[in-house]
Image 1 (cartoon, rainbow, N blue to C red):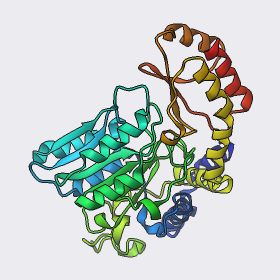
Image 2 (image 1 turned 90 degrees about the vertical axis):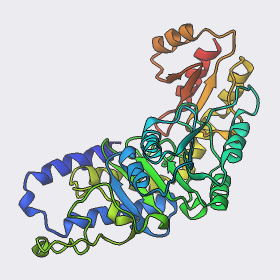
Image 3 (image 1 turned 60 degrees about the vertical axis):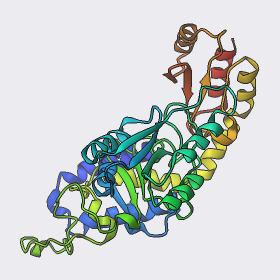
Image 4 (image 1 turned 30 degrees about the vertical axis):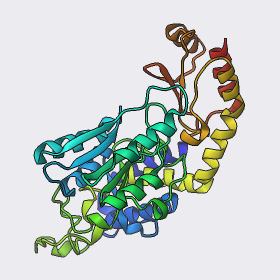
Length: 356
């Protein structure tokens, strides 16, 4: 957004005279960002939120502290985004644990419903972590986090959520789901810059070890005059997991402006806008033979359009390209991701091309 872009320019100019930046400013802006993001995800304690450079970084903190023994298992879903897979593969290998991948059912009807049930059925006494997104990055399948959380609680497993493809466009309630980790990259639906993200860590990680040893996350690091009196004690709770140099005077103001704008709009309103935008067009696409998941098992801001045997993917690609319509292709599915910058004319044009 232009608002975010302007904040980046101001940050670059601010760094031109770094001697004017006070010690208090190394902490103040990230604290404000925590408060704004807590509103966005409906979290009660902003100090459970930290800045991170990427999803893989945020998940690595979870992986380092996950209690895992030989024979235990970690559950992921099929074709999950790699940043929410590689950390678990490594820790499973190191501890002789198992990765259980729940692939989507090969069915044309109730695909999302059946996929969710398979995940619930797979969680057992050996499960120590379920690592999943709120919506699948490839086709927008919506996973029932509330039921998954209930099942993980029953067996004493952690729940780590990659919210990159949903937080900012789909309402999320930390105080309802109570995840052990909610990790988000900032450059997607949060509309922020690249190389900065946000992570929420629950009480299960309060006494863990971060993946890096930096000065700024140490107890009483705000006292610059006392930094060489080295302190082995971390800041309390989740704050120990914040990335080093998190006082980034360019990226943090940009991220803050993005989250502020989303709070002003209201995430519920963003999702409602997308729902209204696609509602009529989805009926037309289904009438033309395309398969689209039931609304109870997909987002309105990100969903897949699956082709039937009569559709020609290459012809569709050429037609969309000719009309300058940008989508993503995932196997036999076209991934559509509308947002507030799309108009009704935009979506109607997409539908016209596909139905033709």
